[in-house]
Image 1 (cartoon, rainbow, N blue to C red):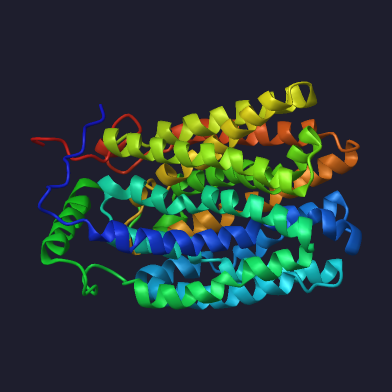
Image 2 (image 1 turned 90 degrees about the vertical axis):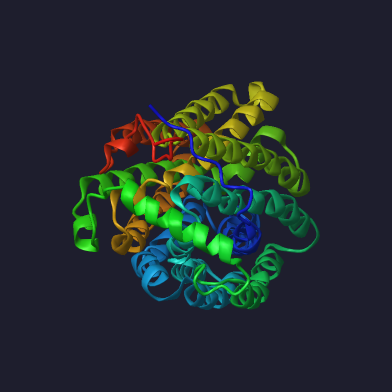
Length: 436
């Protein structure tokens, strides 16, 4: 039975929540904007570069092949070297690649730049998760992860109407010029604002530092990871099960994200500005769902069901939206919003699972493995939807049905994950019980 976490004493300051999370949040907001704005650029690219739906899906998905390269090194360096330095370098390089997307002259250049953008951004996700693991103990981890991961839906909320306005008044090239530039500014902010750990931060109080040291010591005693080095982790069936679940879930997440403007345009017959504002709605719902799911998971200590239920709900809602289509466009948007809520809500809780399976020395590399291979779903989702659109004469039902299958399967498979400590099992929690 899940137990309830002991509250943080009121005497302990919580400065880390306002110093670390907002800076990391805005950093990855920029990253996610640079990643999915291509979905808005498809229409202009189709005319200028001669891009078909299949090639558009390939351009959206090839990012994730490049993204794979630095996942394991990024996670490893985030733990053993410096997440701060790694992310600073990545911000500068991905800013260059994002801006260059607006200057491409043919399909080959487009595919190359998107591939290089993936390499530049690769490793930032596991490096940042490794950074958060140094600042937030297990009982706070789902909320810390989720507050940071608010950047994903918030980026879409910001990007959707802004991208629509840019396309309505300028061109798809300016879309990439304008949305790539903030990475350079944030590289400076990140360098001066982020500290590697509580031990190196000058601004943290002694009370908060000692509290964190005590909590991390408790976490070490509570968990019994089955893999304590990267070799054991990479040989663990539980780690590979997390890879599979993440791969299936991200087929749906990115398939919906990159094709949402097209889906909404077909449903509503709105122009670029109208589609942009309408596309923000599902992400508003996703922010609420992400917060509620992570808060409830930390409060109860239960993890697996808080991953499974959002994914299954997302899959079912996506199928319903495909079936009702143009016959009930308002309801279709409602169910698309539920889909987006589900594919976002699972994220914060999902990333509390690797520390329960692998030890600290293997954590960065393992998260890089899970994120890198799992994000190949970001290639499969957009490409398969584009391919199925092409072969079915632009019938979106086939593509959405495919993503429904992957989301539901991922939600069911997560229930088979087992932890090294029975107190951290799927029926229980990693929790601090009063009096325990």
